[in-house]
Length: 390
Image 1 (cartoon, rainbow, N blue to C red):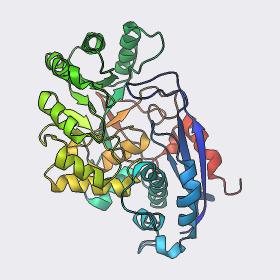
Image 2 (image 1 turned 135 degrees about the vertical axis):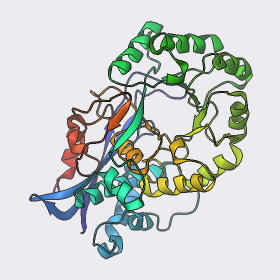
Image 3 (image 1 turned 90 degrees about the vertical axis):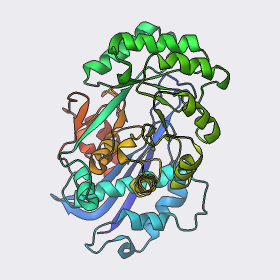
């Protein structure tokens, strides 16, 4: 099995909305195709990947460093004993001459290629990725089922609390039982109003999570957590800036609800520091490391293993930006669940065409690989990259 070509395209996914940290007007993402010499039903086997949301595309790094290194590697050095592409060996090739530390955007660029290779690997076995992972590592959900929650309630110009209620209601009608909304972190009154608006639809605090995107103001934190305590939220996400472990620990001490964090940490180095210094509580808090952004499955598995060695359950992992890939990984590794954008009309929203949630749970289909081919509006972005001659 040999890689013939790798294609990347940076695509716009901007929208007129924002969270407490960034606006999404000019947001981009990368789409990747790894074309191999193996053929299935007369067509080349192609591994695809689509970026996580919220960090911009990685085209420059991919074209300048990581795609050339992967193509320059001797083909036999990327194969396992079965003659199939081994993403862990490809990771070693891509990381050649990279210094320790400085993970940042590099982790997302390599993560895209790693995930495309896993898509190709599963397709070469004729199995969905979740099944390959469960069989290979002896863990996971044998039926491909996983829990999901829907994220809504970004800030949009001129939108009222009625608009927030409508978004929450639509997510509930789409089958989501647990919902997460965005808060601003600068006003206790405003944040409570948004929470109460969502609760008027959901009814129970245990089914509502809130996301601060690292911007809860320390001078209002005491009053803020006291107010949220009465609402009994499912979790409070990223109240502190991602690398401010001391502030995170102080917020965790104030919170009776679980703290969720990790979406902006991209390596085991950062995960280890979170364990050491973040003040998290092993019995209740949640870890949201993004699979694609943390060197792909190869890096993500190392992080999960490190947390397990520190007596954390893999059920504590709820990956950020739950797209089709996250569903496969959660089901294959037996993680707690993952995040999803409910709007299936978006290439990165919803799930595979025809898939429906039942009581907040998703069953991954039996499509080979990640199954990008089973979501038409996303595959329309990916398919042109899977042609050998462009």
